[in-house]
Length: 157
Ligand SMILES: [Fe+2]
Image 1: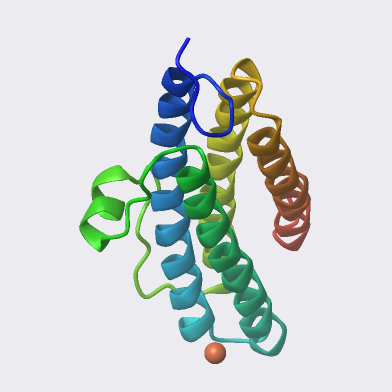
Image 2: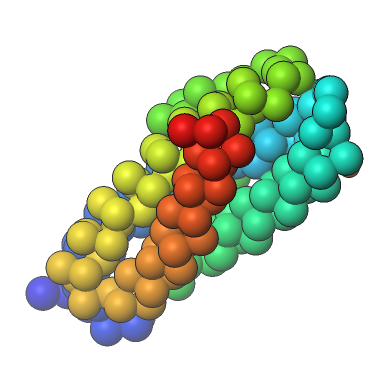
């Protein structure tokens, strides 16, 4: 087994890095989706939802940086172009959505896909004894699973 600089299996880390780069692409699309929701939201819920989406996109931006820096720590290179993100994402790009229920449904779809990817990365990084990546992903899912509850409650689901 070839070890990387932090003593983990280099081949296994390459697979984690590939998955993290896909997650990075998803977060960049999610971030921009949330920006659009923050700008375009209209109607009764405006004064609560406009700042809520700002909170959400700031959290997404923090994750973008954390994922990219984890990729470097594992010996990889984070993708950083819009083209890479569009080519690698599994999320949909939402355009000009202003209705609160539609937005909550779209955010639920984004978060559902993110949780699934994060669970896949937990399995992969656990197999590589990479407990730091496991810990980061568990932190994301702890927060994201709660958002599933809250957005579902908002939608009366
Ligand atoms: Fe703003």
